[in-house]
Image (cartoon, rainbow, N blue to C red; front, top):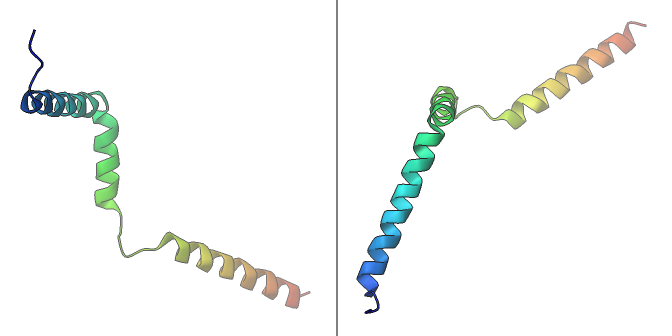
Length: 70
């Protein structure tokens, strides 16, 4: 039996990778659709780190104002 050529091996590998990708897409389709729709709805200009810093500043200000009122 002859050894397969490099082109044939590459074709088989590419076909296997494509089949694997397709299988994953089909198997996880509901999760991937939900994930992709949440990415589409997200605001790319909003930085979650800034929101955390703003919340911490608001808590600190509220704690300071409650200490002053005592």
